[in-house]
Length: 175
Image 1 (tube, rainbow, N blue to C red):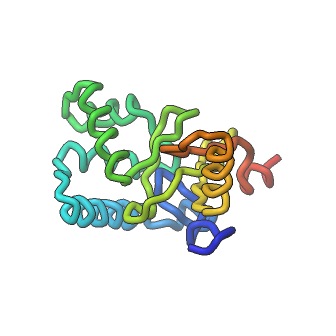
Image 2 (tube, one colour):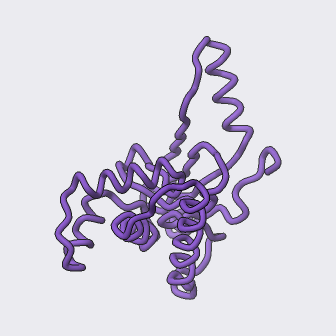
Image 3 (cartoon, rainbow, N blue to C red):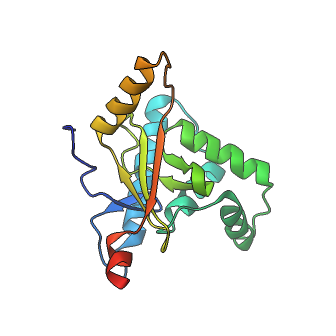
């Protein structure tokens, strides 16, 4: 991806990326299905085991247009009739993060699905303080600036997550 470009469609909701679309007209079941299909393919190629529980957690992360916390996922699983310990959900989320299938938005202690799980990239997010939507950027210039700035100070950056809080275009228009 060239420098200064974003993901093909920069608006992330629950991990799925779209270009500021009308949520009512959006076929969310299709994007969840696509995410699960990609997850199965990637895990199979990597020799990683996408268990039924991990798949359900991934599906629940993708089920919202907002980043989802572990306890929201846990509550939804209880509604499904599955009693699951919080540690089990956290382990599933750790697996999904490790496989690059979801990102953790640290400031919200919540997770979003990754629209480009097959590509290694840093997490760069614009988080709307009003509606909670998160837009993922995949801008190599941002990644390079952090890596180079850290290296100039003798620091080796292992993992990057950049979170910028503000207002999305829809919320700005509503003000």
